[in-house]
Image 1 (cartoon, rainbow, N blue to C red):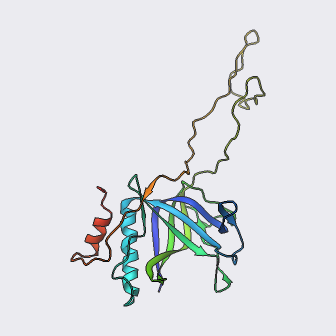
Image 2 (image 1 turned 180 degrees about the horizontal axis):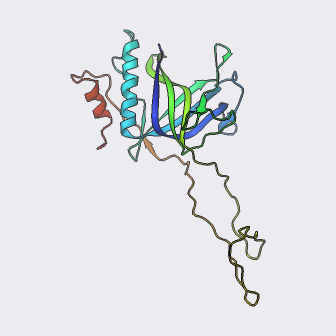
Image 3 (image 1 turned 180 degrees about the vertical axis):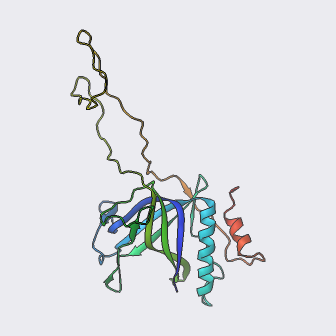
Length: 237
């Protein structure tokens, strides 16, 4: 049985929600594809702080224990990746099709709850809430809880920017400033106009070095779930 959970105030990483994508080995990247193609899925990775990670893990653990079968591990393993800066990353996905039936695309909303355009493309670095269904599973003898992507609410949108492949060229064409209020140079003087550049405030999508925080989740423990989770997401680590 799937439980619905909303992950609040996290940073979107490489979201692919506008359509289904699949990893293409030839180009070594995810490419758009049809919903019934092999490995087709909607997906979003996200970065969260310790508090958000702890709350999500508690919800996943509760869902796991409520659906646990006798042959499953006694406790849920920590599936998150801990970054060197103390944050945690994880991923929510939705297959393009189940049993040959194409799935509905995850809905996307703005901060006021209004639906976004069908072709809206969320960007890395945006702040979002993510609605997922918690689905406990057993695959190949490994048990965990998947996050099945349902909807995304965009709280803060980071505009998409195209990378400029060019530098400056001396003595070349310079576009005229369209500002009619800018002071013009006097006729007997020459005002040298130099091109200016703004600091690059775009988000660097290069992943930081990650280390997986290992937790001894299958060993016996006399503490309750809160004690276990607190120790797994200790900020002093």
